[in-house]
Length: 490
Image 1: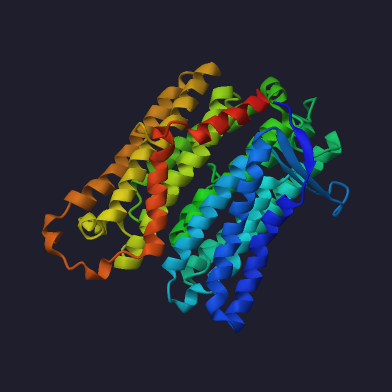
Image 2 (image 1 turned 135 degrees about the vertical axis):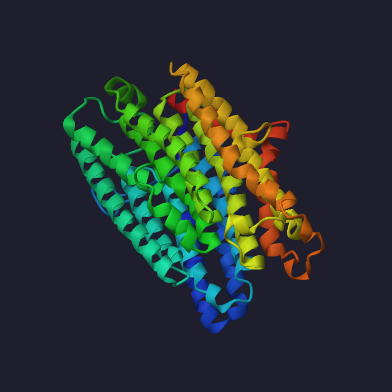
């Protein structure tokens, strides 16, 4: 579908609103505390409304464009195509969900006040990544988002939090340096960094291979690709639950989006296929899928188990990118949404369990489903989705990834997908089984201190419903949009 260009300032406003809301929240905390929550909600709600307003225009065949002539020679460029609007809509929706949850998580707690000073700018950075029109703009917002996440990792101010934050900070520096040199080489060779051309590179060279590897390092760190993953388990275990949920549901996807842009917009699938460089990512993706699942078995801390599971789940997305297949790309794009619903729900459930009971160890959660039935039911729905049981979301993405392996002439990789799914079931199902059946003597436990808190529970229920809502609806909107995106490149 041919697209026409429409100059618009709306993408810049979408990025600026969370930043302005963070400043207003700071001022409100100092002068009018009763207004603080209103600014916080507005900072995540208005971007969603703006994205929703421009959505019909973009999917109808237009793309919004804005070039700011600053930081030459490339400039800050926004370009909202179908892939951008899909990612921006997901990021904005999950940002609102996490913001509402965070208000409940830190309800009436003074220490939660400053959390939003960094959460909202991080959201703004994520939106900037989604709406970027060239790799230079992508890089700027990508680094800004990462720097805003660093204080969130260290927010608990414990020795473990400081150590995890420092590890994340140094990995962010490495990623930034790698991406910077990749951009420099790309611009030197091609004279351009813009998205939307279907490929800028025409000739293989050692310089472009170096740039390709640098892109893999930079975006691989953020997406927790093996062997660049080791910041994530510590960060998720030490950070507050809303920060872990933000990273899992949104920020990991910025790394995946970066690789999609590298493969499909900067290098082009024809060039990468001829050069064979996609096999580098293919091997790393398979290792991530298996290694993440195997490591998850040994984790008794719930957040750490979810972190290693996330490494395996991101492996699915990387595999779909590396296959250079039309059907696999549909699976990748759909899995971005499916994983956000599934893993976001799990992390929010883990946070409610911790706030209500103080428990983080899986071994201590036997019978907890009798205390917190709604929370653990939502967690179980997310678990079933993660394994890929139909008709939940992840089944749809794994189905397309499996078809993609056949389309790419590598059907043996279906076996890897099946093994990974079996491993997922092996370390997830026991949590839910033990939660409801593992300790019958808790049937008469005192429950009044575990009453439901709406600001925490409503986001969890929405995400649990979202894990299945699209697949049982008459029209699967995300799947149709994923197909439209894949059509652009194939």
